[in-house]
Amino acid sequence: MSYTVLARRYRSQSFDELVGQNAISQTLQAAIDQNRVAHAYLFTGTRGVGKTSTARIFANALNNPDGNAEIAKAIMEGRDTDTVEIDAASNNSVDNARELIANAAYRPMRGRKKIYIIDEVHMLSTAAFNSLLKTMEEPPEHVVFILCTTETHKVPATIQSRCQRFDFRNIPVAAIAKHLDAVLKGEKRKASGDLIMSVARLANGSMRDSLSLLDRLLATGKDPLTVEILQDLLGLPEREMILKLVDAIADGDAGKSLTLSADLLGRASSADAMLSALAERFRDLMVLLTCGDKTDLVDLSEEQRALAIAQSKRFDPAGLVHNIALCEAVGKSAKNSSFPRALVDALIVRLSMAEKLADVTAVMTGAAGAGAAAAPAVATRAIPAKKA
Image (cartoon, rainbow, N blue to C red; front, top):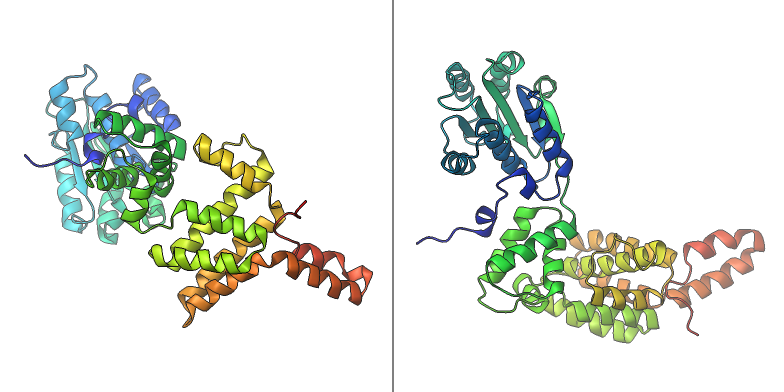
């Protein structure tokens, strides 16, 4: 028996199960309840946020009000006769559009509406879009179009103006983590809270990406799943070593910082991965210092949050902003450099020597005159907080 991936097995089957798109699901339900269903919709958003799932759920709610299980299954699997799914990436010609228009004339066999879900609609050719214009503006009363796209700017304004547009947001990390926890329970597998949170963060707002990554982790056969397994699988920098590197930078110990970064570079898949992890850590510390210990803007487990709060006390917000900017600049430069390692090592030393460099700047600006001292001193202020 073939294996079905998690993203398909745990796909939302009703409006109540949609994750992170409450406003859209409530609006679509209300439209059905009030008999105010439009003839065309445009669902836009990044990949894996629920556009196609919502289109199927909407079609099921519209055409299957009694909740017939057989009809619901056919719609959710994309094989219902009255809910036609079209992949515009492979059916993008004007002939495909004309065939769709011709078939739209036929009434639905058992449902209230004939629903056309056109996925990746931005892939249609200009001629195909032009063919659809008239039908999109004045379709048969029994037809509903649902256009799904990740690239709205490629959909002609003439098409967009004929649709009700819904913008799907990236799903919050906390919502993804909660869903992943439910999936793991359904699979009867265990995972640490840190692992679940790490997978949710790596998904960048995409539920499908998070489930695909969880599928890869489950395929390792290890139980329970841990952050260390994730790091080995993806070649990510080890979290504990990143924390040690940040501590060494706060201590102003350039030698230890270089040694730790060298070890990290040997374990990470790339220098970019290490710099991204370092910048992300600085970002968490900055947010905790700026917004307070209880802020929801930092997605960490309780244990990791406590460690981050303690570590944040060793820095000041302005210095952390500077650190993040340096990581970003060096990351970009290293990609096009003949000596990327030299740039990364120089960055680590620069971060570790921030306090000394700020002291030198203060002396130089002081010699230049009191009036000019304030601005440069702030721009290169000490990044770690002064030791007691």
